[in-house]
Length: 134
Image (cartoon, rainbow, N blue to C red; front, top):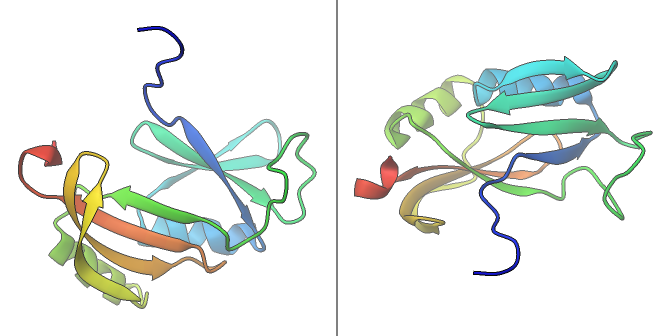
């Protein structure tokens, strides 16, 4: 094979209106871990990935061409059974916008629920079915 072979996503960036509200949502609702780096920058860690959080507008040196809050559509795979995810979301006061429903994940069939974060980004929380779960 020639060319580049991509292994995995390392991080992505969310541009947000309120960094503190975003951190609270992703920490409390989705169980991510906050980490500060490079002085005043902040990220949310989960698994082997992270989400860098940029305020809007941002003074970060290089950003997407037109970064705006509320333009992301993200799918997270949970190790927690989807039924327990739903109970947790409801306990956190997070409205489920759609689901549970069958979808197609990167490695096979998934079951998903959809919620919104504080900026209105669409957040899909999913679990794989069968062998693709590991």
